[in-house]
Each structure stands twice: as structure tokens, then as C-alpha cells.
Image 1: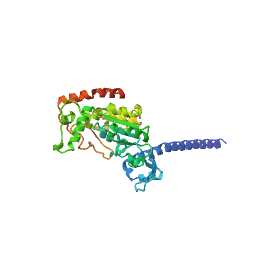
Image 2: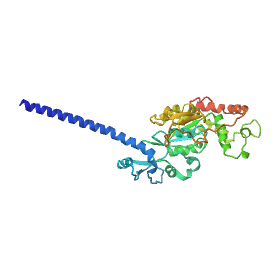
Image 3: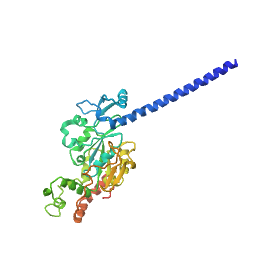
Image 4: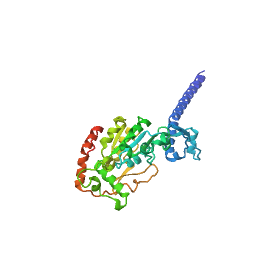
Length: 342
């Protein structure tokens, strides 16, 4: 009888251990498989996003599409899991400001696996609005669940009709504004625009800055007018609360890109992935470059047209320009709650 009870006791222990082992296997399954799928979702963005098909819709709403056929085992796994990609309207917009570092910011944030952003500027809200939201949505990259779509067009900040149109698209869209000392910005803008003209058509900064050789600032000159940040922000604040904006310092983006990228990732609700390890400073160009990018594993900088050498501007003109912008800068500081130190 004692031997029979002993056998039953051992049997119960083995049964108990089997239940514990089965529970552990099930718990591992619950945690591992979703993470496994998520990691493949991120990989899909980098390797297979352009291979995913889409179908059109007429109202601009999000449209899901099944993954297309592909020989990759990883792609087959995603297809078998019935995961879907979609094109949808932007969750965030880089709306300005021209020549303040918007291109650099876009390239930096594209390193994040949960951000999809086309490089081209479609000028939808200022030049192509008649094409409709359906057309705009179909220009967007494909995304998977958990990813966000971002778009950049610096002219939006200074175009009066854009804020109301953006609000109609999405009243909760996140708005990113990169600003820079308006004096430096104006000279950079002039450098770029003059480089596109033949020498015989180029005018000096002084000739364009002053009206007919006087000491009166030519406020009709777009290059000067863009630097009146407070005026444009005032228009945007009629449609969106300040909480939906983040203001990135173009100067800080150069000297400490990781700090500004942390602010941006926090603002967008993203896990902070882009850090100091992604950047190095290029002394020749005078701004930070990437240790790697979305498509390149090796270090590289932005295009050759970035980092142009600025022409020498007379100190008297620089002083006049600084005085001209000062009251507008102070108002901008008050509106944003940030002293940019210009």
C-alpha cells in the first residue's frame, strides 16, 4: 500500500511540473510572437515598402491593401500573418521655415523606424490643392500599424491660405517649425537663390535689401519678409493651439542635433531611438552629418548644395537687418515661450 501511495505522489509531481512547463511555453509564445511580428514590420518598411500594392479611394480616407507576392521568406511570413500596409494622410507636417534646417531635420527623423516620410515636396496645400485629398494621400508612403506619416514643405508656414486647408485635413495634426536667426536665414536664402541665376542677372544683397539706394528696408522682398516669424505664427494660431506646434532651433540642430531630435521624438510620442551615436560633425560643411541613414549604412552628409559659403555682407547692412528684425523676434519669443537668443 505504501509503495502505491509513493507512486501516486511521484506521478502528481510530474504532472505538476508538466503543467508549469506548459504554462511557461505559453507565456513565452505570448511575448515572443508579437515582438517577432513587430520587428518584421519595421524591417518591411526599409526593405519591402515599395513592393506593397495599393488601391485608390475617392474620399482621401485611409485605404488598406494586402501585401503582394514576393519570394522572400520574411515577406511570406508577413503575408501569411495577413498584415496590411496602407497610405494615409500625414500625422505630422514640417511646415517651415525655408533655409532653417528643414531638410536636415527630415533626414534625421527618417532614421526612426516608426516614421515614414517622402523626400519630395508636393506643395499640395499651396499649389496643388485642387487635386484633392485622395490624390494627396496616394502620394504618401506605405505604412504599417504603429508607423506615422510625415511630410515637409517649408513654404506652408508663410502661405496665408494653408492653415485653414491643413485644419480641414486633420485638426489634430502635429506641426513642426524649424527656425533660425532671420538675419542668417535671409543671407542663406539669398545665397541659394542667386546661385541659380547667371552672373549677369545677379544683384548684390544691398541692392535688393534697400529700396532704390535709400536706407529704407525693402519689406516686399520675399527673402526679408520670410523672417517675420511672429506674423505667420499669428495666422497659424487662429486655426491650431500652440500645443500642436514644436519649434526647433536651427542653430541647436547644428551644434547638438541629438538634443533637438530628442525633443522632436518626445513631441511626436515616439520612443527615443535617434541619439548622439547617429551623428558626427563635418568641419568642412559646418554642420552635422549622419553616421548612417535610412538607405545607407555608411556615413554621409546632405547634398552638395547644402553648406554653401555665404557672401560677405557689409556690417552696416547686417546691423540694419538685425535692428529691423528685433521687435518681430521679441514678439515671436513671447508667442512661443522660447528665447532663441537672436
